[in-house]
Image 1 (cartoon, rainbow, N blue to C red):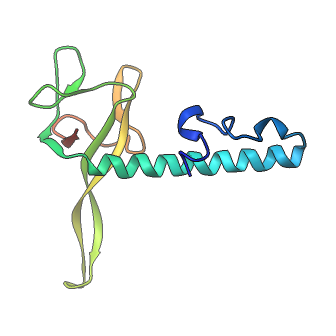
Image 2: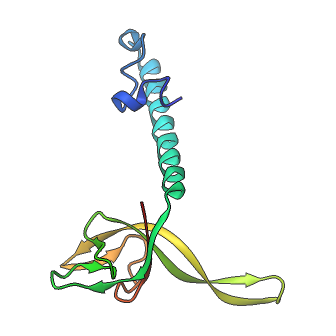
Length: 136
């Protein structure tokens, strides 16, 4: 769908043969909805491609001399950087019939506010000492 529609080439549907024939509000609405669906499909495809990449490094973060967080090999994170990190969440273990803490690899991105880095959606996660994976 992404290639046939021309979405990959144009980031919209302007590559369709009858694109210039769209005239009514209803047709524009359908076009907008199709574009939104293709955008979501593109995101899914990108996510799946990410998980196909091999893991190059597993390490812990420390703050470098420039105030950025980096791994032992020097892979650093700054505003807008994607990050895959290990967080802990309480989950129910049905075999043991009890709650327990479990590790979950999680993808997000790093941002900065007032000179402090944080992980989007997880503002309370401490970056220093955080276990991360780098793919590529």
